[in-house]
Length: 226
Ligand SMILES: *Cc1c(COP(=O)(O)O)cnc(C)c1O
Image (cartoon, rainbow, N blue to C red; front, top):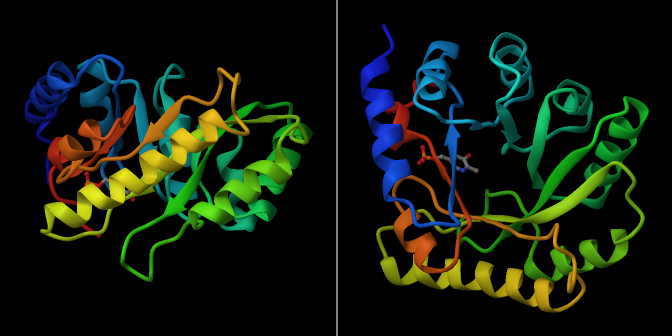
């Protein structure tokens, strides 16, 4: 299948122009070709998200250096080495063990990486992430003890449902956690500023709840072929 380069460029420009100031667009390019990423890049897009380690490494090696690669999938310990050389931000920190292992690998290889702690509030059992309490405890336990990693915010997903009420409640729970951290243990820390929430079908609601970064795949690149 050939890549619809013009369509991708048009959708990047269209979505970017409608985002309010202070909301960044992270284009979710997982399962799409390097050509698709290139089309979005040519339209001015610089932040791209991947969910598989090998795919991120493969694309990063062949695409321009000024792309900010974000990792958003569940990261297994044995894949850390593939991601650390390329990642600007790892958005999917769901355990202390993973966070400390990334810090150690970044330190060993002289890299610096931003991370977001992933919160789980959605109804689905299968989604990864920490409960708000676990996330807060992890932030407390690791505060000041990481050398090559900066915790720049949190990432979350709403329940995959048609119920706007449920989606709004989930985004509100994520926003409230972010706010409590900012006013609490992260107070006075200017690095802690990213509230990553909102996907293709719910990003308007996420923005209404204070999202500073929306992660959009399907509405830019079309359906994924798994
Ligand atoms: C795939 C994915 C997205 C993008 O979803 P779309 O519905 O295609 O916009 C956003 N966030 C995470 C964590 C994802 O895994």
